Amino acid sequence: MEKSYVEQVYEVTRLIPYGRVSSYGAIANYLSLGSARMVGWALNKSFSSGKAVPAHRVVNRKGELSGSGHFPTPTMMQELLEQEGVAIEHHRVVNFKELHWNPSEEL
DNA sequence: CGTTTGACGGTCC
DNA sequence: CGGACCGCCAAAC
Image (cartoon, rainbow, N blue to C red; front, side, top):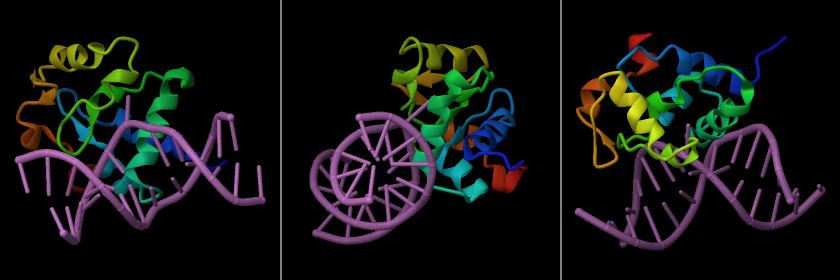
């Protein structure tokens, strides 16, 4: 039974360390199965997957909370990150370069 | 079964 | 520095 693309995205997303963030492109590159768009698309489905996928730890390559609008409330993503110690300013991750987690290098 | 859409990314101008 | 454009590939229409 091969895992579907979405399941693999969930798996990698769940591996993102606490207090760290990753990007769609990094995950897509690690899985080498598709493009960054697929990751966003997969995470979108995560809401109906029943699994607790920390989608809030995944941002775009600029560190922007591009997916915040897809959460139950637009501010939820930011608040969740702040709860984990990730500072958000102007809809962006502070120190994104340092907090960015690349599965291909750190996993 | 062709077209459009998308939580993106990189390049080009 | 910002905006336009193309590529990625699965799903919805």
